[in-house]
Amino acid sequence: MKEKIRNVISNLLKVKPEELKDDVSLQDSIGVDSTEMVETVIALEKTFSTKISPKEVTKFSTLNDIEKVISSKVKV
Amino acid sequence: MVKIAVTGIGVVSPSGIGKRQLWANIKSGRSFIKNITRFDSSKYPSHIAGQIDDLEKYGMLSERLLKKIDAFSHMALIASEMSLQDAGIDIKKEDPNLVGIFLGNAIGGWLYAETELRDLYLEGREGVSPYMASAWFPAAPQGQVSIYYGIKGFSKTVVADRASSLMALGYARKILSKNKLNMILSGGMEAPVTPYALLCCNTYGGLSTNNEQPESAYRPFDRGKSGFVIGEGAGIVVLENVSRAKTRGANIQAVISGYGTTCDGVDRIKPAGDGKELARAIRMALNDAKVSPQEIDYISLDGLAVKIWDNSEALAIKEVFGTRAKEIPASCPKSMFGNLLGASGAVDLIITILAMEHSLIPPTLNLDNPDPDGLNYVANEAREHKINKALVISRGRGGINSAMVVEKGE
Image (tube, rainbow over all chains, first blue to last red; front, side, top):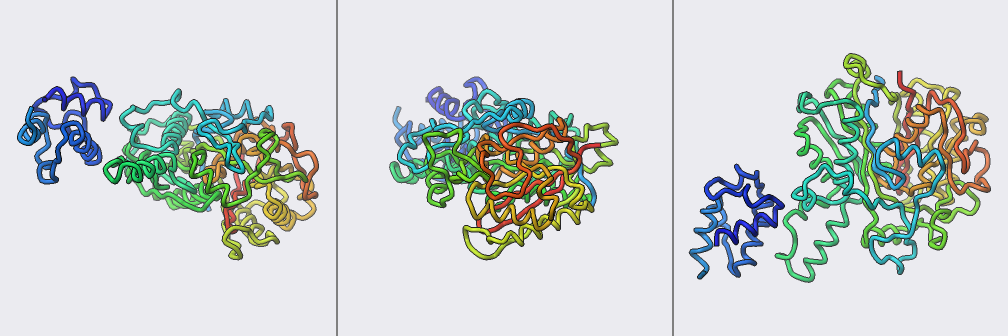
């Protein structure tokens, strides 16, 4: 799942997959801004056929965090 | 008011990207107005324009940024970079609080907006890019330029139809003359060659429908005038106080010495037919520059190629310059690449500065039978002529008048 998330974000924001570290926040690694985060959430919702609430988005920081939220909602 | 130096020029136009390419094409009198190829516009009454098709070649911008911005911001960023390089300014060494951005735009970034609106109706609100909110509005290029360079000083975007960018330059000069900033990136950008924007321009009226002969469609001050043709592009210059420019050994390409603006207040589209308010704006600019009508060597015409606009412009020039109106060379180079709407005044200023540098007046294309008479039109071929002081006229819908006096660099 983590690789899938990494690919979604890398394709969406036009950054190299290796720039996205598992345990570094997206803000620190690639300087993601709030609008990019909205776009990321929409793309992840589509990819994993789920809904992510604004409260859950506040927990999105690193790839590990995102994986934790999505895996709690989606059966792999 | 204090004279303000133009020390860098950046331009993106259908006649060329960069001042050298633009000048080479302008002086040779080549038309760059063609049938629109970006989308199927064949059902529009007017479907010709000055287009820029190779913007990506000049990109210093990442794909990540490009997907968030409209073409008009892209053009503004390229023109800004060119002007800074031309001025020899390393923006990282400037105090960001003392650098400003003053840009003009008339219609906003419609290519981005209309694509997303289509998605809104097809896919619902979740189909719309979150960047839509910041990509389309007229001040978006100002924001993108400020983010790109980390510029933090007092900045503004002027929306005044086709007069937007000359007005932005006028305000920029005013702010610099009060010593509130060290330097300003100023000019304008416009990207109207999109399905919805072209439709609006068609609805507004005044466009030439001579689609069969795109190159000869835009005929300012010619008896056979049939309206104007739109174009896209950006013109951005670096402005600084003359003393600062001299201190850092900059090439002072020109100085802006006067500006005036008035409104006609008669109609929401048409100007006043008598040109009185335009004449007042020209006088304001001359008085501001402390330049007499006898000293002007060249007039860059607004030239909409619509009878009431061309006639009232000529009347205003005759009122201010009297018998000299017949002597001062005047031309409308935008007849070669289209009217860049909100960016037109800035590009006119840039072409005027290049004309001063080369002592050569670029022509008005398609001017075979002058109408109205009484001006010294430079028609179809460039004319050698030394220019020390010039007047640039830029006007907007509903009778917005602006005039700028520019003098040769020191």
